Image (cartoon, rainbow, N blue to C red; front, top):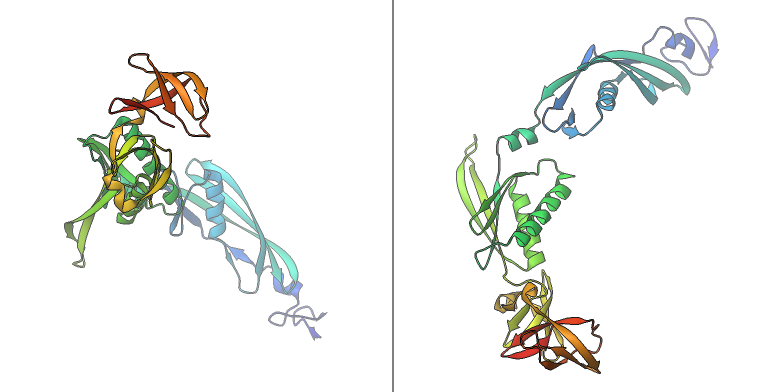
Length: 342
């Protein structure tokens, strides 16, 4: 048991020889600077907090900026913090921060006020993006030398979705621009690592060929070489659903992935796997969109009778046991013989 040197009361705990009431009397527990500058990017609308740029409602950002600037004295531990902001003009806010602190097991409240000033600027990402900064080019091409509109839209959607996912955790990643060029499209990217990951993703999805080539573009201030890398992704001519030729057999391409693909033989309807290294041997015989439709006349066991799409003669076709047969089926003509395409 000790006593307070100021009021003389006995007290179980003391700070600087004072009881809790005398120690708190007239003492400020918290403080704020006269003003706090809050930077906002005029391009993306995000606010700077430390070394991060965050998307916030303006009033929330203003209150968070004031709370982040709060200082608490050594012997007090903040328990809860609340803020009240009042707009003085669109770029100036008065913010009061109320804090509940723990001092030797006792709760004490204090408040401090500051001015938060909104300062317009441009963040580093937007500055680079607006300045057409890029470190890599992703070139999307096809083996035929012509990228169809459908393939272009599909691949660019994959690229945009992938960049959006990666940018959610790394805001320095972005697409600078996209350019339609003869034979395909060029995508300019903010980082070499982004270009490499996109090239790998497209290659795995389409079982595509990839190449990369660096180009020296200058030196840094400390003499280090600066490079830009071009990543070429050459899409194969085949697509899932096409009738293709592989090792002399006519097959339907049923699957493509990073490990290779799967084919269904049109003669016996047996499926087989194809290694990625062997995918380049696949040749397109008939595109899926060019397959003919034949009207079904009847079915008997593992055979169906259809009308030939050219001369309307009745043709018997063998079908798989589990085939679902509707009013018409897709067919392909191989050496003047009609085959059912599952």
